[in-house]
Length: 261
Image 1 (spheres, rainbow, N blue to C red):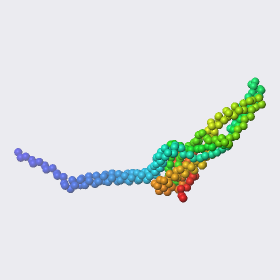
Image 2 (cartoon, helix red, strand yellow; image 1 turned 180 degrees about the vertical axis):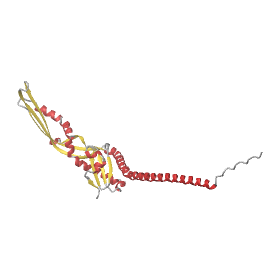
Image 3 (cartoon, one colour; image 1 turned 135 degrees about the vertical axis):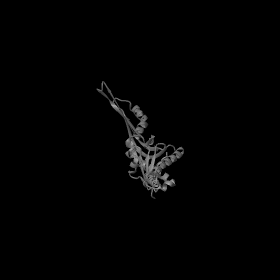
Image 4 (cartoon, rainbow, N blue to C red; image 1 turned 90 degrees about the vertical axis):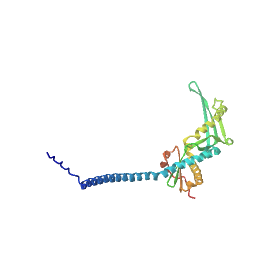
């Protein structure tokens, strides 16, 4: 019996194979192009963001650097100048009084009151500590300084050569001398308390502000790198003032000194 020859299978044409390869290539290219476009867009956006951050770095770095450099200078001068920067001196005529009243029988019999008084010129000095926290920064052409608290230099000095005293005993009292002696012993504590009161510190606040500005100005003049910044003004606020919250708030205050000759 004669065998039937196998039916030949149709061959894929080369043209059809090429078509599928082309379609695959085009699809792959489209995907790659899409990915590259997204990547480039993200990269450009990222670069812009990074550029913005880098643009802000110099000012922030400089504000930090000026404070650090200034503090290093303070550390170097402290051993020879001490830890205080004297700012202001005020002389006042002080009056100190001590009363001593005496009664008997549950305050029904009055024996008199001894009154002692001392009048003396007192010299108050005020300073800030170099080792306390300082903050320096720059806003445009303004050097902004947040200085430490103003402190009284204790004890106050008194001019004993101009001291006046008086003491008068009550009609049945004989303690005028003793009452005056006790008052004299209390001169220093009472004057120290007055020296640190807010009202006395406020009296010297503006002269002290100017003294700090002069101190910083002298430092700026010595530092050529800061002279190149073109500073024209110095603003000074003290740590206990509301505008000392940050350098931006401090910068809004009236300049104390002008650096332009």
